Amino acid sequence: MKCPFCGKHSDAVICPFCGMDKRLEERIRHTADAFYRKGYQAVTAGDLSGAGRYLDQALFYDGKDTKALNLRGLIYYHTGEIGEALGLWHRSLEVDDRSENRAHIYLDDLDKHSSRLHSKQEAVRLYNEALEQVRSGSLDFAIARLRKAVSLNRHHIKSQLLLALCHIEQKHYKQALSALDRVTHIDPLHPIAARYRRWITELAEQGHTDAEDDDVQDISEHARVRRAMVEPDLTEIFGTGKNKKVSLRNWHSAVGQIIMFVLGALCMYAFVYTLKIPDELANLRRSNAELQESEEQQAASLERVQQELLKAQQYEYEAEQKNSENERKVKELEAQVAELSDMELSDALAKAVLAHLDGRDSEMILLLADIDINDLENSSRDLYEALMGSMTENVDGMYYDGRYDYFQAKDTEDEAERERLLNSAYGALKIAMEFSEPMTSQKYYASYYFADTCMMLGRYQEAVNASQELLDTYIARDEFYDDTVYLNEEARAALGG
Image (cartoon, rainbow, N blue to C red; front, top):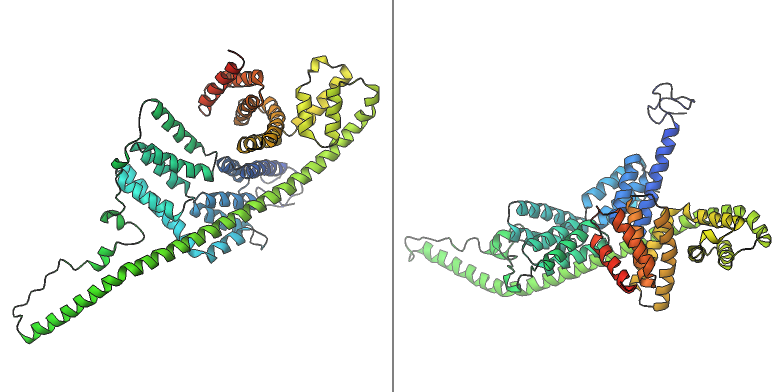
């Protein structure tokens, strides 16, 4: 067997050449695969920033994982980082050049739409120029370049964020919020966008007002700016010789008359040509607009197909995992179910067992959440702990399921569906909050989402407890801190003080 570390052949578990434990590679790959699955789940939940961090960890442990390379490249492509995306896809093909590698599909699609690739690369170039302008203090010129970059690639998050920062510096808060809205449309949980929003809110609370619209300086037609754009100014093409003077010693000579005739013909041609320019420009602008709209539709269609493919693969993986997990659970509970007739179970515990056997885990969690373990006898208590253990083995999955139901409930207008989603999120988030590792971001977010879910369900005391524990434990954190304080005060007010 070949040693994965030194490459020499040896059948021993401990390589005699380099002294490394070959089982370590398996553990490393297992860790990388775990981070990849978390990144995959974050992508399906719409958290591109979190997915990127998980996938970076997966590639740290296994830099040759083509699945992680391809998915990280898709995230870079979706957020406008075309150079990083191309680098990862080529790196994936260096690892595995077979036709099954999806990097072939992504690169072939870019080859077919070279104009789209050129636009994205030009957007990156304009962003770099804008960054230099910001460093030199020329915010107006930077904004002009960033607007052009955004028009070429609306998904370039860095351009959107830098544009928002420039608007904040110029006290144009409404325009900054518009740029941040475009970022959250791409990546709803982007941390920098959230930080800028809190900054604008704090400025508003301090009495800062938005600058008047008349103060906004539009320099997009400035000659110096136009020279840096993709399309040059027409005056730079057709007006380069307007200041030149022609000097003739004798305008009455034959040569002078010929020159005057040629100049007159050129003036007449230029006059006729200038009459035609507006129509040609209008047609060109319409063609460019139609082409850009077509490219955007194709890009949106490709993204939808990719998202559907990701969802299908995720559903298939989850179904396989759930089937194997259910088989194991059924075997573990068969012996306990055989003894149910001899136990005096509470109605809630009996209903929880039946819900678990039917695969209705969300309903089972709600039933278990209302049971006080101190009221149960020893035999019933063992069954209660077995049911809870079956859920806590997949704390990460419960967290992502609960968070997904929580956001879906906030977006739906159907009251019945909203209540169903909130009840489902309540049980899953309660498990995630209680059994996640302490002092981790997952436990922090699970506690906040759980408190807000309790508030929407009218469980005010639980909302107070969860939010207060969050404030006491995570006082050093700044994310959602103000929202947690407000939630705690609102829940206390609902309880009557």
